[in-house]
Length: 328
Image 1 (cartoon, rainbow, N blue to C red):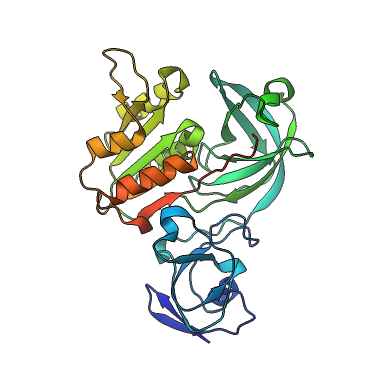
Image 2 (cartoon, rainbow, N blue to C red):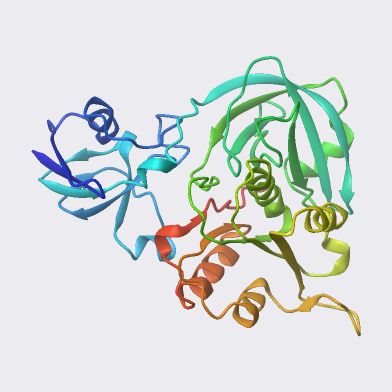
């Protein structure tokens, strides 16, 4: 069977018992991959024509624009046309399982904690990716995004404490400097695309700010020339964190600016009153040729994606790894 690869328009021949990822690698088709087990979503590709067996790799609005599958878990059933991500944005950071040591655990806001850990082995990742952290064996694994960049000496994670959560509600009493935690990563396809000059709109709510900070820092440290806009949303001022850091970034980098959107504001507040989607609607009339990075609850990601595409954004250039609640 034959696969026509877009956008390169290269045709390859594939046997039915070969995974798409193996076929791509054997035929020098550049594609991002990481865990090889269908967990990270990094090797997502779109089936334009033909039939492929394998789990769906997108939901909501992403799924409306073609059938997305995971190359590492899929096999073709007919001749196909398959679209892979832009060749110059490929990443291949092998997923690792490491023991890491806690170096800091402190408070960022009333219900957000900053966890810093140090690895004893090299750990490569791209800005915006996440890892699974296992705090204890029995139901103690949760997913958190790295809030820094690979060049940092430590890994930083932002954790929201959920009342009665099976894991997070216990962390304040059980996490201490010197403790060991198991880390598995990197995971995720919502990583910084470095090789373009398009303006960037980053949208975050809650601890979705962590991967967005990673993406923004990465773009600035890599000296990308893109204009970078951030919309950071929360319910109230007390739910915010990291504002001093954002202010410092904006003061030091003229290409970066940010908006704080709050559901509830005080009279005469300087913050935007409303949801992040309201801020997008109010401040951006044309998002054609923008790169969009979304991080937060699935409902926000879906709504923000819709708001952006209504303003001309290409859904293929909207990146998000939505995290679903798991009794955190």
